[in-house]
Image (tube, rainbow, N blue to C red):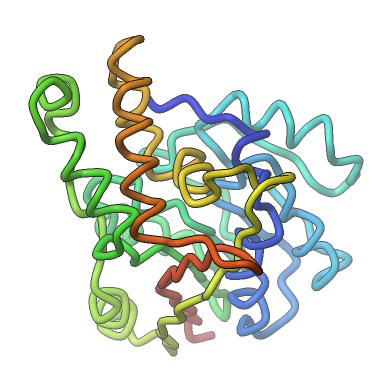
Length: 261
């Protein structure tokens, strides 16, 4: 299981939070109960609280490291957190809103899992998700190309799956159930600074907190450092630093589906 580093993840908290804010902005209604699947370090609980002040919020995540930060950082009396694997978890009672930010790309056979979870959405409730769809970008193609070579390949076998799900798959899943469904894609142009809090290799720092973690953790000491230097060099060429920052284009898929009352 991948071990997550909350500090590394939160290094780009503002940029990583933007898709969740855009997702929440498209959700209608006034849910009394909310489940945040893959809540991570809990930094987005405040976004949900700001939109729905009276809601009971439950954050669910499989990372103890992330939940430790979530619990310690949030003093919200109406928010709680639960350690669980979303692939096997189910809400104990119907929920008005299930929302998920950048989780389901990590879930094997995610569409059947979503199909099971949406049964827990109350009539008139909503299921909303956002997932990365950037696997054709250089950050990911270089990661998998380099880690598939010579000394790295024997350690990273099975970690090169393209986890992208076509937007149409989400539209079909919810529409076949008769839910009112809105699906779209957005490509963000994240401007990452060089030096300071973003480091000298900002694209590597970004992906090492998320998509590259399984491969980095699979490599043994010594080989990992060699891989990192090769990967960093390739990323610098693919994403050249400019005088005002380094641009990381990043495409994300969104789906908001509302169950009929």
